[in-house]
Length: 469
Image 1 (tube, rainbow, N blue to C red):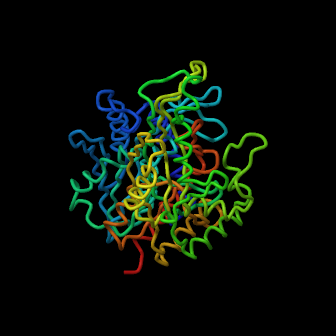
Image 2 (cartoon, rainbow, N blue to C red):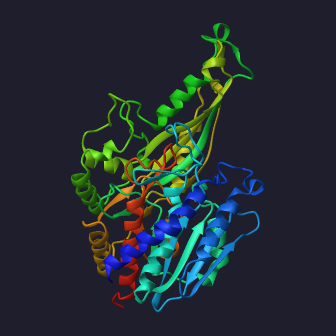
């Protein structure tokens, strides 16, 4: 492949076609069903899906068939098939549903207005994960423009990933034989350690998300009257959280939630830490004077990819400060996000956490924990031809070799496919680098990086067509 010619074509078509459509997509508040219970009535999801569908229809790809699948009551799925001239099947994956807007956007920025600053496109969903469909098809366009062979390619862009891919299993079953058995999956929904090379994700943590509630009184009572007689629900809540997490170290207390980290993943973390150094912690927006829990970047990488970790992400029952009178609250509830090691069985973890939280409620309080868990994913070793293609693609389009590391987040689809197709090779990569802040304020897509990642996908697809069989 003429990589310089491929880079020129990708750059040109990204600027002229893909980026304007992506900017229009950012303007649509198509929040995932978990964050918009009225998504069907609001119509934003359908509007975003049709926008992407119309762009796909304009692409000059031989053998392209594209459609919007809409099963009753489920978020849409954009599905494209590009006929191949080489054996095998490649499945390229992304999603187009979005996280909610969050607060704290810088002046001149907001989640639903695309803004380009210093080569970065700001707005919700551009990097997570609106770009995926554009990169998938433009990679194929670059191949076909040079007359190079590629396998049959399927592009699947779902609409419920940010809600745990709740609708995807139904579509996988619906597509059935049309999917076949892919021998390569390319997922464009992951992180990158920096913007200077291609990064492969080799593991994903599972997640257990649930609501922990504590109820002590039937109604709020004057704190001078109640304190010293009744235990505050907040104090009980603190004690329950202490059953899960060591408040001083942050370590999860339940030995059942730990696994042995594979030696190969430890070696990867060390290699990544050697390159990233202080940037492992520096990617987070610490306030002045605050710092990470360790100065060892290898430890931080392993903490965030192979150890369980607890985060409280929301609360009910606590009034805003302006309305907080001297009242003992009757009931409080918090939303917990517990990240699980990649190879831990998620259902067993969920049962154990609920058992620990609900056991022997202090003072007879009513304690409940309701949640759901999703398993993680641990990649099989790359075939030699694929490892070589990933590295050569990174050198060609970034100027330096690829690196790999685990990712602290979850992509339910990857775990699902890993179970369904145990012999399949995976290239899990993405553009979510330092500061890109998916799910938070000021999310951005680094435009140079997305074009380079697209080029690397082209290299992988070309190598797949010539792989040893």
